[in-house]
Image 1 (cartoon, helix red, strand yellow):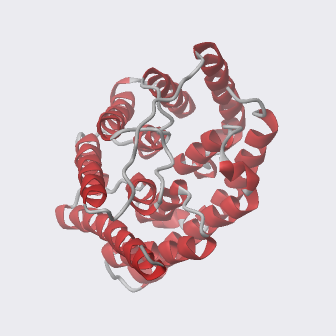
Image 2: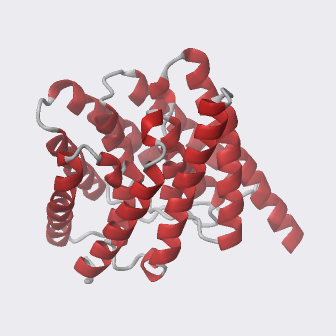
Length: 310
């Protein structure tokens, strides 16, 4: 296959990713159900559709089950576990570590799926249903792309975890996260640790991860995505009164062009891009700064404290 054909196929994948996010936000606007907006969907399209090789060791059934189960668990925590917010988040973080180990996968976007409803105080069953439906769309579209050779076939090889090392790793992750989270949660500045940043923190904690070699690129990409989402939401939606769907369309277009230029497909950047679409407008001006600060701290803490492969 020649270079032109590969470039055309890549553009097609970008278009599908933009359409997925656009349809999701349009459905939320049309129905009046904000819980339909699931920012991690943009991360999934980057990993499952746009990237040449899927960055996670996971098959299609696990994607559906784990995303659905994580989203449901997050809502159940909000509805029935009456403890301080920081402990709710830590409970979700620990739970995702447990099921990732149980299912022998490194499909860490489920961390964001589980924690986001806790951040937003979401009690509606619409959220887990929406996540399940979108997960089905993601895996069905991935199947079609593989069938028609728009992307390489994803071959699932289960992760071979050492259970003792996994327990130590997740206990350490939970402890370090809890310490870092104390000040932001105490001061109600929780988006210094926005859910996609927690996913990034977990990725950087893997000594084998390639992103550890380019921390400043990743920090810059996360900050750029946050700024793009906030800027377009503030100017187009809040100032000019235009739809969130238009903001989403332009934001995804800008980010995907940037990903093509820097040649780094880092899925959490897609999730952080769409977080501003569900934030209160009073938080938009500070959100990019919070993302930059959180990304800076979390990435280098992870690199410093997690040096030995599990």
